[in-house]
Picture 1 (cartoon, one colour):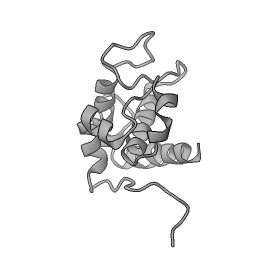
Picture 2 (cartoon, helix red, strand yellow):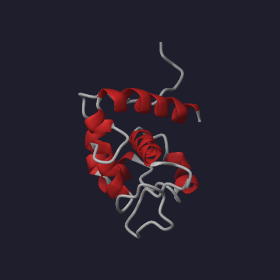
Picture 3 (cartoon, rainbow, N blue to C red):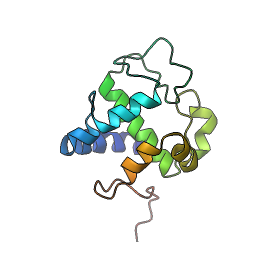
Picture 4 (cartoon, helix red, strand yellow):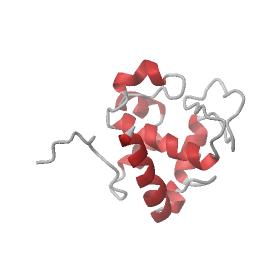
Length: 131
């Protein structure tokens, strides 16, 4: 939970403000367009049912579009770093690209974006050993 909430804060209050065209939590930013593809379309609120081809099916009807973008970026970064592999069955109703390999296969655009050295997004998971 700490990893998720800290990463939300960094992406929402950092990246989204510094690089709004890329990481902005609004319709039309690069990450929002990628998220819309992952959700099977652009939905400003949670749809009653996602299209069959959606693979990011965020499930919180109280969330707004910005929150959905934040969640998508969290799932993408942490999956790309290998943090979701052990949670596959737990998260399958919301996110199916739980390994770096699946993410690359399903959503190469987000992998390219979060791997772009310009933005210096995390490249390793925190492990508590920093010496």
